[in-house]
Amino acid sequence: SFDVHTAPSQLTNTEELDEDEVDFVEKLTAQIDSWTSSMDQIDRAAHDKHLDSDDPEWRAADRVKDQVDWEDAEMLRLREAIRGSERATLSGRIVQDTDFYDVALNPSDGDLEDDDSGEETTHAVARRKPSAGSGSAAGTEDDGEIQAPPVDVKGDVAGFQDLVRQLEREISYWANGASRTIFVYGNPAYVHRDIETYSTAFSNAGFEVEKRKKEGPLSGKLIANNEHAVLICLALKNDDCFSASGLSKMKKYQRVNRITGLRAVLWSKDSFCKTVSSGTKGEAMFADYVFHCWIFPSEWTSAREYAQAHPSESYIVKPLTMGGGKGITVVDGEKGLQKIRFKTHIVQNYLHSPHLIHQHKWDVRSYVLVTSTVPMRAYVFSRGLVRFASSAYDPNAKKGGKKSQFLTNTSINKKYAKQNVTDITWSFADLKTHLDESAAGSFDSLFFKIQSAISIVFLSAEQEWRRYYSSKGESCHVCFQIMGVDLIVDSDMNPRVIEVNGQPNMKLSKDTR
Image (cartoon, rainbow, N blue to C red; front, side, top):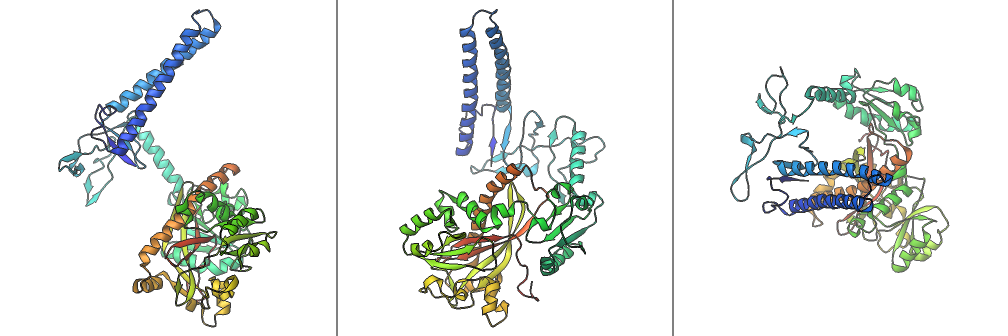
């Protein structure tokens, strides 16, 4: 985003503009000239082809000419509006149309800034005309608080304000008589596992927690009659949360912690493979944050070609449906892939040189809150987990060695570890202390790379969600979800995303959240 500060001769005088602004002006001018040329050609063709005004085809062409004349007048109006405006703003925050907004050019004291030349630069400020009886105008200081500058809007200001208030009421639970409560339900095993964590978090935010006594999904009728501000469904499948039409019954101010299409886009291993492969295709820099991935048996040929070009590589093989590290194996080279070519698996190239801590392999469980998918809006939590393999890593072991050496899943390693699970799990704070005291690199640098890797995966997913919603004719405006994103770090301290979990465990053990 950038601001274009204009003079009346903006489209012809570009000496005061920077490179991006000049590029914008040139493109806009070229587009207007292109429109002008196209309309002139239509006009000339209509006149040259039929000179007889009685010809029915000429009368049709004459109607075309009327349309062209109207479009020509509109284009001239647009050109003059742009040239005559004192400021045109192009940004993701403000969209200013000179036909609908007035811009006040008399800046307040806070609107004067020094540019690089040492001269004061005046920035136009959009102001709203206060309606009758509204009291003092906005944009002034009141009791030490600075209000947002108002906007001068032409037209029915009162009607516009009423519409905004209506929209605010529709999306705000406190304006609809909804209780400040959350409603927890879902699969009994996952409710038992995670309800304490969600209850603590929402209670700290001032919400009361109500747990549903009956098992099973909520019907559309139950959702339509539900007045809770937030629905928390703890389950592996959306079918355990609500019926196919359930989301459409939710009110605009309500939220539910389930994003439709998650399994089809990121959660299942095969969808993750497709989404990431599609999103990073042809982008070498992006591909450094993920692993090569193949879905067997359909992509066996592509995997074999890769194996032939990289004869020393090994591959980690995962079943499509199991979780918690179950069914995972490592195979070496093309011969190892040959043995599984007809089986249904996900295959990723294996990281031979992971970063080790005390000779043990480790990975990162990062937590990500997604509040919107199209457009994508995700927040990476600053706290997370570091999970260790329970046995020392052997880089020379065939097929990855023992599972306790190459797998970092807590659910697997707590079976091998004779100590408490917390002994093979660190917090991010523990990792920060270790890295900052070692020569491996800083935690802050690693966390920045982790955020970059997660961003690449979720921006790849945005396009897939767009296709998914388009194909289903639905959306998910009331949805949010906390996801677990697993990453592994190589010996050069570069993280790669392994997979995404839509219902991550919120506990280390019975006593530790």
